[in-house]
Length: 171
Length: 334
Image 1: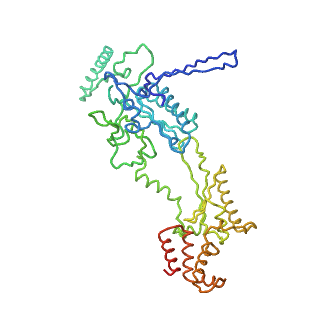
Image 2 (image 1 turned 180 degrees about the horizontal axis):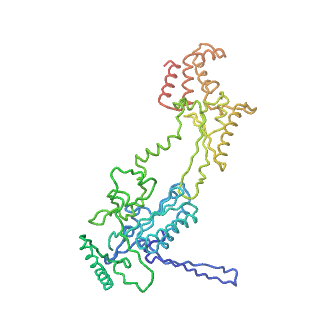
Image 3 (image 1 turned 90 degrees about the vertical axis):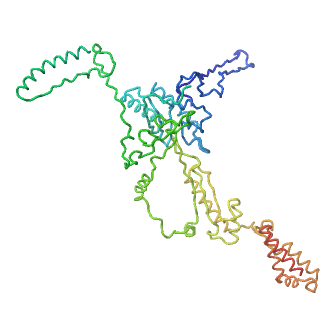
């Protein structure tokens, strides 16, 4: 999923160099797309450092541990055999994560878990108690109604709050 | 701030003394305690905002004990988890731990544990909850009809079986294109077909007939709606039935190669065996129609006929080959 809480510098830069000569019709035009290389052995990994960086369970385990030590952050039936709609669900997930990250800015303690139960979209999040409860209630209601209208399906937010982040280990 | 409160104390003290004096004289003793009025700045360590105006920061309440501490042992669990909900550590009074432990450590506890939230839980489906569901559904249920006790009775009253699938998935749309497929199954023995009609029906449907179970399966998926596919399947069955009863003029041109079963009469096998026996002069007379008929009537020739028919129809197997061997031995008196 694209929107991670601690996105560490995997910025992709797309630059198109188009060489074309508009005068001569037979030379045509070519495009060259260049990206910064993002190796798969550096994706979603926090590198071991001095030992003063607190990381959560989610951040400490690398992507190849998914299915072995980590569960899935998003659950829906579209990835089963013979089912369709996987692309739409993925795009919805990405948007919901970015939306939550921005709406509850600085309050998210961990990644967001998205569960779909039939029509219902269940967004589970663990938050820090940075805002007073009234503000939390307002933001929860705002998110739920906005996303429901946007996706034309009932959206429920299940929020748990903590005093501070749960640290798994220090890297 | 300190000076302010001390002034208040002094003022109260001054008021109190004459009161006390008054009360002492009447014999009653009252204690007037001065409560320090600190409500204006309840937050610890905040500077005095007296000059700022009416902004008052409410005291931050400490989070109370989670619900798990106040749950009696015989509570109604269906009230805690009435419907499917993610795991809430403050509502589940179990010391659950989940996760890969750090080296030399134990799995992380349930508070703030994202792994427990990720997985689906069935806390809303305890036996007590299911019993409640069943009780709620019972008024809407009816008894199974007593005339349909066994499978054979069901087949007898309802020989045509229609099957279609419903699909449930997670997403805003409940349409699934695979839901339009309809399978219609019927046993040919339950249809009113004579020999010719049955053979013609089997030829017409081809692959859709299963010889072992005598079941004709019609699968329709060419229409966009299930209702249309069902109507089309019933129409196909009706047309097949009526067409198989009709005899067309060109059906008289059916050759031996079109026959479904092997029949021994007028086959090369019959001609061969009769020729061989006549050459061996078993009958003792010359060629003739009555001689052939007489030979055909013999028991061992009938056995030979049965064994060859069985071999051709059912294919080769231990028992059929043995039967053929016995029949040949009998014919040639070996």
